[in-house]
View (tube, rainbow, N blue to C red):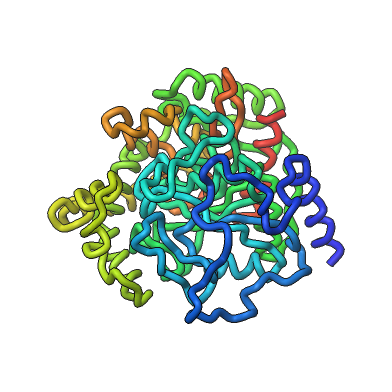
Length: 448
C-alpha cells in the first residue's frame, strides 16, 4: 500500500501544474479543442448498469481523471465510433482496461473525438467537429485518436486510453507533443472495441504527458514495481540510416540528429545498422489488410451488439460524409482488396515480423530509434486527400504494428516550436517493464 501511495503522489504531482486533476468531473475545463464527443454518462432509461462499474472513492488512482477514445466501451456512454449512426450503441460492460482503471479509483471524464470509424489521420469528424492541436493549432492533431492526444496535451485529463492499429495513438501523440505506448495483447479480438481488423492488429494504447507517466500507469494496472532507469552506458540503440534518417522533413531531421548526438554524448552505444527493405512495405501491407478485413470484422461487431443498423452496408447507406464515402470505396465488395492482394499483404506483414526478429537477433540492441512520422502536415492539408500521402505518414509506425512488438514514443520541440515524435521500436524479446525502463531513460536523455 505504501508503494502505491508513493506512486499516486508522483502522478498527482506531475499533473497539478496544469490543473489536470482540479475536478474529477472536469466540468470546469473548457473544451476549446473539440476533444469530447460525450462528457457526461447518459445511459437510456430502460438500460441498467451494474453499480460495480462506478469508480471507488479510494485506490491508487482515486481522483485521477482519464478520457477514452469513443471506439472503446465505457458503461453509460454510447460507443459511437465517431458516427451518429451508433448514438444508441450502449455497452453492457466496460472494456477490461477501463474496468481496471475504475477499480483503482480512476474517473472516466468522457469519450474522446476521433476520425469517423477510425478511418483517417486528421481527427476531422463531420459529426463531432475538427479536433484542434493544443500545442500547435495551425497543424493537424493527427488521428485517429486525435481527441485523446489533444485532451492530454490541452489539460483535460491526466491520461487517455486509445486504440492503435496502424499508428492512431502514436501519430497524434507526436503531433500534439505528448507520449504514447502501443501495448501488446495476446487476447483474441473482442467486441468491446470497434474493430478495424480481425487478425489481431488492433491494440489498446495509452497517451500521457511522458513515458514516465505511462510507465507508472502500466505498473499500477498490472501490479508490478517499476524497474529503475538504466545508466546511459547500459543502453544499446540501433540507428538505421535508410529508415531513421532518410526522407525526413527538415525539422524532423534536426530533432533526430539532436537526439542521436545527446544519446552518444551521454555514453549510450549507438549501432548503425540498416533495416531490411521489407520495412518500406509495412504501411502499404497494413493498409491493405485493414481495407480487406474491416467490413467482415465490423459486421461481426455489429452482430454482437444487437444494435441498429445491423451491417456496415446499412450503416453507410445514408451517410454522405467524406469518411463514409472513403470507407465505401475502400472496404465494401466493389472496392475492397481482392483475396490474392490481401494474401500477399499478409505474407508481407509476416515477413516484416520475421525481419524485425532477425534484425534484433543480428543487431544486439534493445531498441531501434526513428521518427514517429517523417513529415509534419498543416491541418489545412488534411482537408485535401490529394495533398497528403498516407503511406508517408504511416511509413515508420506501421513496422511495429506488422511486427507485433512494443513501440513507444515521446515528443521533443523542434525548430519553431513544432512538436516532433521520437519513437522506439523495441526488440521482440523485451518484456514491457524492461522496455519502459529503457525508453524512459532514452526520453530523459534526449529531453534534457
